[in-house]
Image 1 (tube, rainbow, N blue to C red):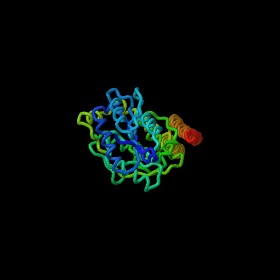
Image 2 (cartoon, rainbow, N blue to C red; image 1 turned 90 degrees about the vertical axis):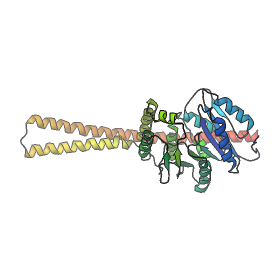
Image 3 (tube, helix red, strand yellow; image 1 turned 180 degrees about the horizontal axis):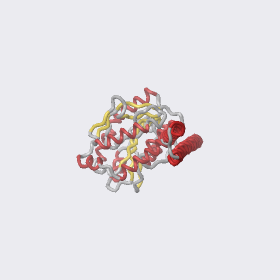
Image 4 (cartoon, rainbow, N blue to C red; image 1 turned 135 degrees about the vertical axis):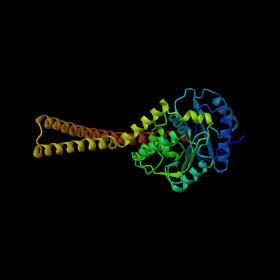
Length: 339
């Protein structure tokens, strides 16, 4: 039995969401444990069973009984990756927290790299990025890779941290920082939520180049390459996030376009009136077109202003919520110390 040294505080918590991993869960947990042992620190592994319908739960409970450093967390109904990550992060106690995929699709060395770079760079959030110089994708279907690259290209223009990968799960965090963020998303949108809220709260971001290699069977890769309803839903939710973070991307640019068309149409109308002989019907129609476009531009700018105000209000509310969360955490720590 590998027993944690309870006299020392946990240095690193690794959170791993799992769903129907029964065929490989024992092997994967063993690999994680071997990688973490090489770091020669006090660690904990938190596999989160996201309502699996196979024997993932039973296997994890058995592993937990044999290894005190494996802290099983989970629930019986599938709730989504975001809920699983929130469960694991809230259960973590480490000075640093790393979240990653169960199949180690970023390679075994990524945990050590993230841990050491977190200490070296002194940042709050460190992202493993396949889209920055030095990073790459391997064995990822073309359609998926294209959509992912396109989405991250858009999203990085909607957030203030200068990062290339906004949507990835494999990340390192300063424990106190990630546990202080009031997270709410249940799905994959949690990755965007963390970047957004971390940016508002003034957290320091950085990224390291990494290789994302799909290690699925050929059958699973072909299945995952099909763009189904879930994929469309994720694309739509990511677009909404981008526009909510940077409303100018939608309403501002659209307003400029409409207003510009209105001005051009107005210029054409003036030229026709002064230098050409046109029927009154043509002039009236052009005048109406000019008015419609300029009004459309005006209302688009108005929507941008309202969206901007709404975003700023939400950010102020977030800061208040974080302050309340920190007070609650401090109160619980004080109560536990007194007990």
